Image (cartoon, rainbow, N blue to C red; front, side, top):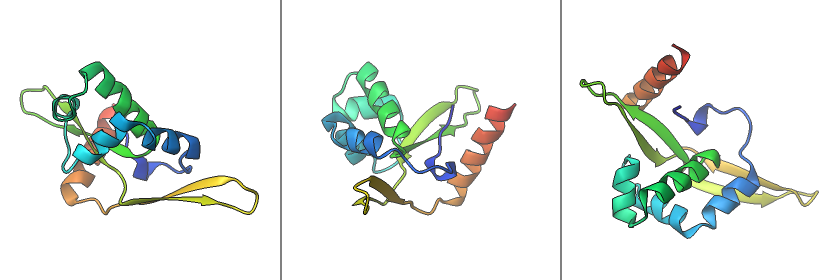
Length: 125
C-alpha cells in the first residue's frame, strides 16, 4: 500500500506526530531523507536494523511525516521509496487547550504526481 499524506482529508493525529518526532531513530531517518530512499538504504545509512527501520517508517508514515511511492521497474521488481512529506510542522494549543498540528507540504514534481497516480491505479486494480 502506497501512502501519500497530501491526499488525506482529515488532519493528522497530534499525538502520533509528537510521538514520531520524539523518537531518535525516526528523527535520524527524516534527517537522512535528502532524496527518496528505500528502507534498505535508510537502514544502512542510519545504522538501524532493517526490522527496526520498517517499524520507524510505519510510525512516520502513520503520522503523515513521510510519503511512500512506488518505483516502477521494467523487471517487475517494484520498490517502495520514502520521502519527507512536509516542509514544516506547526504545533498549536487552542483556546480549549487542545493540540493541533498543521503541515506545510512541498509542491510535488510532475514525476512524483505521476508516480502517485500510478500507485493509486495499482491499488484500485
